Length: 164
Image (tube, rainbow, N blue to C red; front, side, top):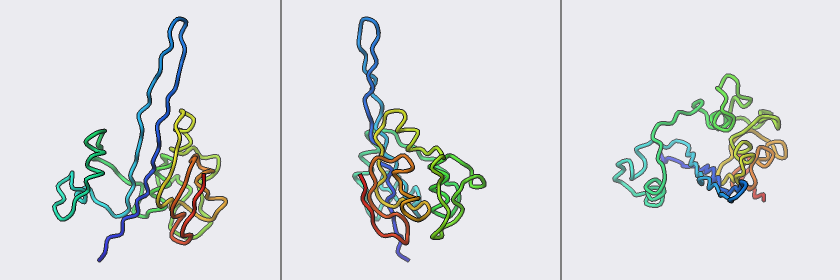
């Protein structure tokens, strides 16, 4: 069985914030955040975690140069609802997306998302790959959920979109 990897990278770029005090100007540098979300991937599938059948040198380098978190739990076993839990921080029982079907389960425009919170903190946000949370456009547009840029698969029914 071929394992399919959908790189739903939430590439959340950093920003600089400036603040002035009475006599000096200080600059606070926020860290860049790149979050890789891959369907059907286990921790042992990366060469940095011991994989011997193939290598993942670029991901290994990102981990070596930054922080690596090795404990992660998904909201549920189904991709759309699990992504909704990640985006909103809600438990599966409280999330508005409860299954992988074409409609009409959506994240509400009034729901805070990881992207909208980071955007308020001065970050530029992007989702590249599989968005995979609900259906259809324009109601399920990632840019209505806090992303500045989006490119890739909207879900398993809508093949490709590109928005800036």
